Picture 1: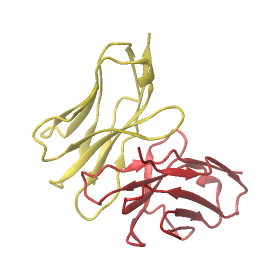
Picture 2: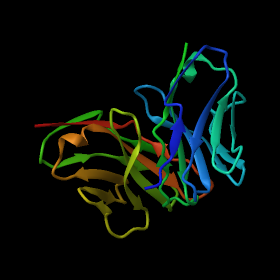
Picture 3: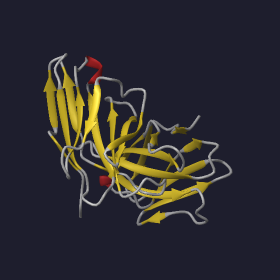
Picture 4: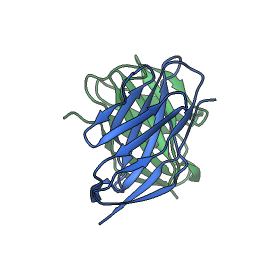
Length: 115
Length: 115
């Protein structure tokens, strides 16, 4: 069964450093998403991406964040200058279409720790 | 504002028994989708079941069923014949049909199944 993959599974970085989180969505999916989950809290939407551009972003997704689809398969989240409060699990998700009845398939997550 | 509420931070159930996890939602949009995800201790998000706002019948997927009461704005997850492997966090989520891509999550319910 096709699945969303994410690398690395764990990332430790120093405050102020840039990190790039990698995702490979399911191959025939057109919509891509990033969510984050701070430890013990609920999952929060960051950004959605369709047709090579951001279609929606939350207030969390400020200028320190960017997303890119550098080739036909990868979808990346970059945090330009990490802060302590960026420590969280970051989930990538993808869906076939953007309708409310389309399931978003989640990857296994990347746990980011900022020291 | 759109919101998902899960009032049970933790639930216990004995193996082979049924359990209901509560979820209420708030939206004024007529068209939306409701989802349940399971998050085991390993951290990944696993899709369980979906209910559309216009669906006449309650959704079922194996041992999972969704008790959808539209007038009450509730979408409770029922797990029948609980298994030890059902121990996990369970998140209810909503997605609107218009002008947004994001899933809105509740705070989750931690289910523990004991022998």
